[in-house]
Length: 141
Image 1 (cartoon, rainbow, N blue to C red):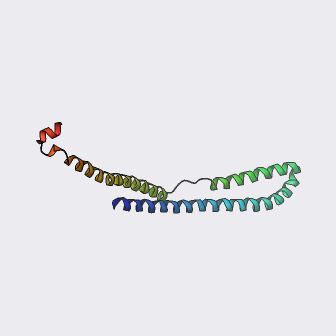
Image 2 (cartoon, rainbow, N blue to C red):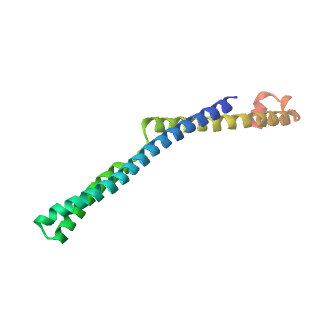
Image 3 (cartoon, rainbow, N blue to C red):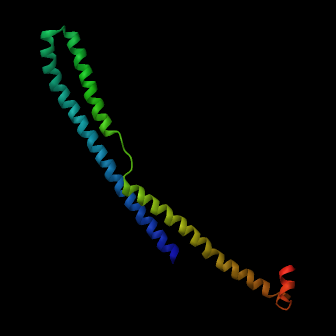
């Protein structure tokens, strides 16, 4: 019975870990989508307006290069915000509980498998004359 309850705890911990992981990945995807929308919208509008303003002060090719640099910096900032994805406390704790429950369940299953084996070994030894021998001879023989 203990093994079954440990397996249930392991399954619940894994479910909790997966839920938190999906939540984290969902937030990550949302940041990525926001970054992409922002990058497209801002770059299109700012590029047109910025290029027109810069064209008054520098040659058109230099205006284009300046805007390219600014766009690259903005994009890099949002990619950096979307990239990190380390597991939170709840995910790490659920994973630890799951692993511990699985280890204990394995130990419990091993013990459960040994009990019938031990009974079989003891029953097979009953057929011999070891019962009639004194204790000191049973231990040495």
